[in-house]
Length: 342
Image (tube, rainbow, N blue to C red; front, side):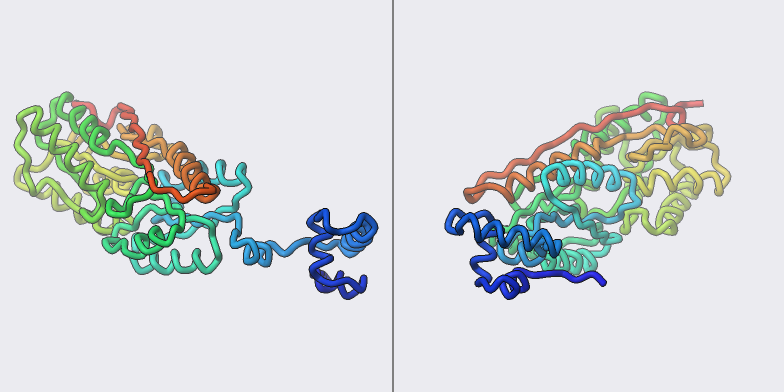
């Protein structure tokens, strides 16, 4: 049966004080060579290993980072997490990942749990429901390291890693316009999220640039970010039943974009013959869809890396940090058959 030995056990066996044993194990110059040798040999004999939880309580550091995302199965977040882990593990930190499933209540519970685990810092991407960020402001005011990535809290002045959402949306919409489509619909996540508002502005700016009228009925919101297939199905149904139905759809997140293809096919619409499609997704199989999908791809792995580098630098800073930076990264438009005029 496995037995975990403590410093107290070593001290009792050797007739030494716990403080002497502790200093000997840490190589303190205050302890004589013979005593150090005695303690280290006995520790080796009983296979003593320091308790990392006890050490973290003593040092007030756990060498772990808490991550809060909407869903690990989301292509963007799974790739971002790979980037987070790459930097964290190479820097001596463990990663604890939690999912909100787009629920603000679950997000709050996840943060409380991570804080109870004594994480050294948090990497946060807000849930679709989250509007109250006062808890993050409270932690930030107390000097707790937080970095937001992708879905950021605008009013919490800390490090952020964002995407050029406006440009990504503008380029995808302009591509559809240049391919001859005029009635372009927009399916997006909740308006709570800054990224949704920025992508909407990019879509609208492309219409304005080319003298096309914006029709409010062409914009549909999925408040759970497409995690509920019914909300995407409802949005697509409403659009395709309009008297002047759209010729093309521009969608703004991974779940919504990849759900649109099977939904349109079930409704009997051919892509791109009946309706063209372009959207944000980091799906590795977008090229294998029928037809191959035109996508706005985000550098998710790099975003995860950048956010983690910022967080670890904050955690390990010897001085309080008062100046924070926002790093914005660029999207990549990958043009395939789904956005072509037939």
